[in-house]
Length: 79
Image 1 (cartoon, rainbow, N blue to C red):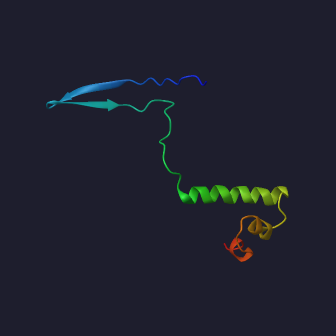
Image 2: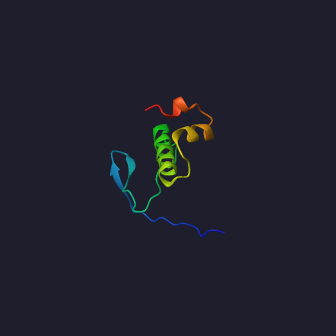
Image 3: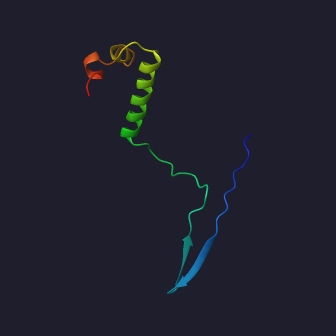
């Protein structure tokens, strides 16, 4: 099993006109918000991976990448 994670933060409460409002300060080491990664970010990461495959000689050309990705060679060469 994994060890439990503990995050400690200080929270200050101030009294303002019949209400209590928490003034939370961002904690160091907080986890990033969980959500969907933007499509452009995923496509850019994929482009970097494919570029690495070309540089390292894993694939010979963009047309080979297109074949492996099940798209036409004309579509893969589009800028």
